[in-house]
Length: 393
Ligand SMILES: Cc1ncc(COP(=O)(O)O)c(C=O)c1O
View (tube, rainbow, N blue to C red):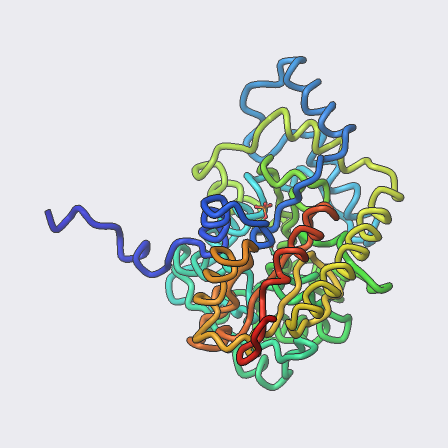
């Protein structure tokens, strides 16, 4: 019976806390501000394109590395926006979400013993991604309140064994948008140590206060050593479609495509057709997406601050990190469970974004990719929440 156990790899990480919170929320009938998916409809034009593709019988496997119309749209848009030439046939691989794009990239480029630099706090998938691909993660702190890194600390994390660095801008969970200067610092280290930048840019269009998204592939000498990841999930509010992609230098594309092929064969064919339609949305679609999210950010900031949370104001993505020390709970997990069970609002414990034990235990992350009515209901429920040592009359 000793063999009826999970692998060593699988025992090194726990179930996703974010998805656990969504399940608890369903159990207690709460308002779900934990997992980052919209509760409003996706744009009609792309839903119609998906239905039309199914009706037209685009129902069999697409080419394993992605249907041509979508790959060409991805290459065209990246070049048009950022001036970096991309050849669809040599550089674009469509995957089952950015999640698979990250996993396929890591498995394609990392050997056991290779080190991968990861900024902490990080999107929780990067930990298991590193373990499953055999990488040894090297964590570098993003320091509060502006979530900046210390260039010396970053430089100290690079060495001969460094194969890659994972960047996520705009950033989940912090809302940080990496500046050109920061990206230049990272790029210089990548060039010095011959390392690859893996850049998760899934919140590319969700950016506030006049900030600008800068792909690290646009920094001098980086197009040849960057794998850019993105997907339909956040930009087009279709997180359930599972369509994402990599843009890689031709020297890495073959390895990524092989891993991708044997992991998943391919992303859903009709949804790739709809993806090509999505990428051709007019420019005002993106402007209004960002404007609507900025409004909701401001609404949720106001709600949380009124209910005694200390908030870190995000400049991109759709999450707010908060400090929960004032509530006097032993840790973030206990507080998150209380919040979903007794107050009826689900959020994500901060520790799920940190490897260093104890660091996230005074934090909670809320998302605001929700209808105004949903945020208003959260506001109403949070009325019951009181800081430690205060009694309600
Ligand atoms: C930083 C980041 N990358 C990737 C993903 C997952 O993307 P996808 O739905 O394309 O797999 C998320 C989802 O929350 C995310 O926050």
